Image 1: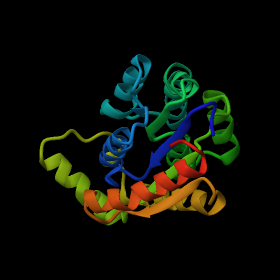
Image 2: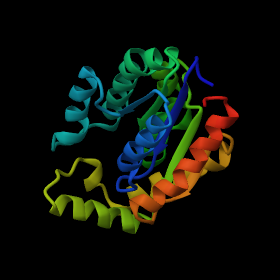
Image 3: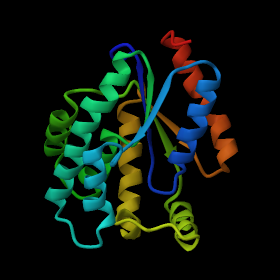
Image 4: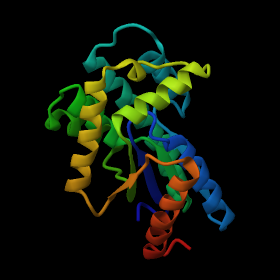
Length: 216
């Protein structure tokens, strides 16, 4: 357990369905009487919204060093002003992305050394780690197809959406490497299925974890 609440993070390459699963999971847990806070990175604080615009929404080149520090600044604000206060109140916090995204996108995909990545993460988080991380694993081909359908339906592409296939392949491989290193924290869920089926796969994993941690 983290503080007095439970910290759950959802990870995956773009198009894996994280945001939808966070909504469905929060609804299910609230229906069972749990106090749940949902959040996301980058952008769920006032500073975060500025960072999101600077890093993801501006259509200009962003230096990788600037990128990693901008994400870190968002995370520092996120942890101290949103996540930790909710955990101290005994709530379940579910975040769409957290530090593992930096490990795979800025570390594996952008090429920063693990030492630099962990230093930046440590400074931003103050050592706060998720109790449980769900990785929604989807093929890069399916992810890119979902992103394409999203864009053609009128939603805006961000900078990560425009990265080449190899970038997304490296990110997926990075997540799977973390899963192998940290099997106690990380759960890999096959996500090449419709949202309702994915939710049916996800909820029992979370409920078992809650029961083990006496969050009933």
